[in-house]
Image (cartoon, rainbow, N blue to C red; front, side, top):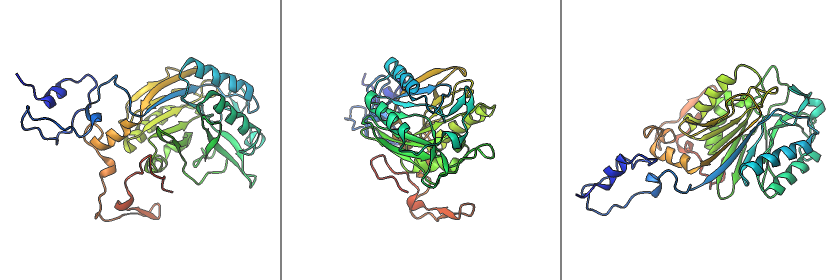
Length: 338
């Protein structure tokens, strides 16, 4: 008996990605030219674009405890995945006492100050991508921002994102005005958001449009609305077909529930409580490509919704519009649009 290879692959479900239904097979003896090997890559086979993650659900520490922070980072990296993207919670280096955030005016320093040099050297020494949470940054105009810096394995600060949506009226920092994505050469592109940003879908949508395949959301939530944040992070992953890594503080600084979500909204990994813990995962950024190509649940291709020739959709709320000609997101190999 000669088996139809397509039917056989559809029956063999141990991690296979199904061949698109429109792919024609008329004769099972006809040689098959598959459109992509990724269409049916088996679980356990090499990832195309792997990115190891170390998410440190840790309680906050004083802004000047850089030596203690360096020791903590090294401990987690040595125990888990060298060469990873290492992420800490919002304002991790920003407490005046356990669970008590420091006053922004007192903890703020220029982005290129002593703290910056220590963090850059740490990333270079450990050969990691380091997101040390966020810090209080004093701008050149003396305003204070809640800012997430990113450091490369070469020991350089490659990006800094100022929180666009401070948690008003409780947070008094000055809002940022710019979306920020970071290229990880040879791997892909990540986007940055901070805590309350996740409540505003426009931010995640713009990061995805700029080519982000993983949105890193650093959080310091000690309140009961972490339950809603989890839902919002899953929704942002689904709506934009991206990975989301949301890293909350451990008690007493936060309520935990850190998690990694895939482009279809499935929670891949999560912490079980508010304790100090290390959440690890290895994601394949090519999964973003596949979900966008074949659709969420094999159905929904949201980035193909608007097509050339469709009328523009006016958005009075924003004083702008959706232009079908510019709807599709940038690829990680393209310069991100601004």
